[in-house]
Image 1 (cartoon, rainbow, N blue to C red):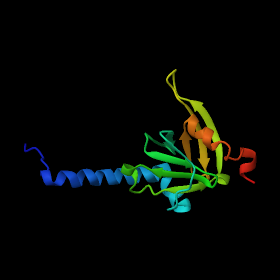
Image 2 (cartoon, one colour; image 1 turned 180 degrees about the vertical axis):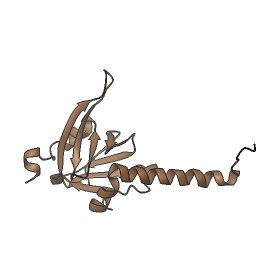
Image 3 (tube, rainbow, N blue to C red; image 1 turned 30 degrees about the horizontal axis):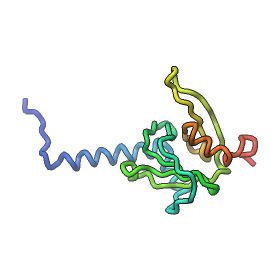
Image 4 (cartoon, one colour; image 1 turned 135 degrees about the vertical axis):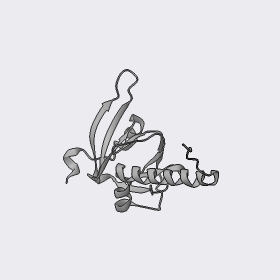
Length: 146
């Protein structure tokens, strides 16, 4: 039996191709694509920049891929350099957000998190530092529908 060997010059395009397919799939699965279609922006508002506090976007775990900017206009969400393809930045206005859940991970090492629903499209799970910055702007569930 002859082993299948890929010619060395095809390895980089193959790896980049797989990376692009996975990146696009994760953008669709997380709800990022829908939010970017609805709230996409090229402007970056002034506000508090928060990194390392997004734990999950929809059903997709995040690990320092996402940067948040909390501004009076809304929540600006952008991806790091490696996740940029298929993850354009977007700015979600505060009036379409509601706090949907709060919890702690398993065991003593579990980190505290808060989940915020973004326009009934998806949720974003953030750490306490991010939620503390966002809390003054997020309407209470009673006033969100109004």
